[in-house]
Amino acid sequence: MSNSNNFSVVICAYTEKRWDNLVRGVESVKGQSLPPGEIIVVVDHNETLFSQAKANLQGVKVIENNNSPGLSGARNSGIAAAQGEIIAFIDDDAFAEPDWLAQLREGYREPNVQGVGGLIKPEWHSPRPKWFPGEFNWVVGCTYRGMPEKASPVRNLIGCNMSLRREVFDTIGGFRIGRVGALSIGQENDETEFCIRLQRLWPEATLLYRPEAMVHHEVTKERSTRNYYIRRCFSEGLSKARLSKQVGLVKGTSTERRYVVKTLPASFLRALAHSIRTFDFKALEQASAILVGLASTVAGYLVGNLGQLNLNLLKKGQVAA
Image (cartoon, rainbow, N blue to C red):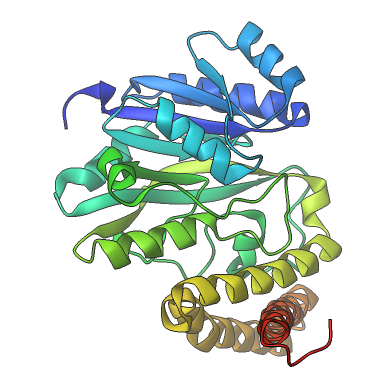
């Protein structure tokens, strides 16, 4: 794995509002200690942004999503255009540490490793809310408390910072779910479904999380609100219900069950005990936010399953349309 051209980096973009972030992300990839063979920016059905990117992003392959609108279609368009042995993905509102690709490459030393992802650190545009628990960093697309602290096999990678061997896509196909825009309710598990499908069809494959491979993910002020937090948790529950129907309950919620049974109770009790011992209102707010986030996610999951149940009954003619 000595050839720097092994990597194709794909960045999917859909809105001009993130232009400055996109430019910053592209520059961070250009500045890698291990230069990529190519950088591909995929514009998702936005002619204005496509023209702007074509005119201003030098040394970058700018293409349009020629599939259905949404993240899956954009990623699949990037995969089709990529020439590298390894295809890495970073979000259009993220930027990479200079050794990002070099650290990802280290994970591929073992031949059974088919994908490597890394740590995603939140970059808050406004001060991080005191009530926002680290266990729920996934709400803003970042690495959350409870994930491994050293290189470890995982069930799935996180799309903002992931890479996969090209042969994976040649073997099992591309992405399928893919949200449209910033938040499509119940469609946040594109890479989770893909990774589960990969390990089901390729049982010996390993997906590796390496926290040394770090990117920074922008978190806008709008995503720092309690309203967004609750909506995103509820949407995640809907998405998990949908995913479980596709891949089975055991596979679809294996990581989440450990998180709910071990990580969240321990964090809640720790925050509660700290608030009682020190009269720290911040800790009490975080403990409350853990309960609210869990309740919202569970509510979304139950609603998602109820909706599916009603749909199945409709198909059987047991519920009046």
